[in-house]
Amino acid sequence: MKPFDEIWDAFDSLTDDIHKLQSDVDEQLKRIDEALVALELRTISLEKERSE
Image (cartoon, rainbow, N blue to C red):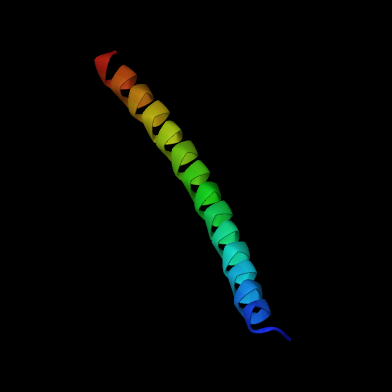
């Protein structure tokens, strides 16, 4: 095995890990956005109930 092959393999592995982490973060951000929308809708609903 050439010396640089190990480096490239490690780099490829690291790149794959980074993409996986980015995908996980994107999924968590999506869930947070959905939760914030639900919270905002609930807040609007409660404010509407109070004003009646």
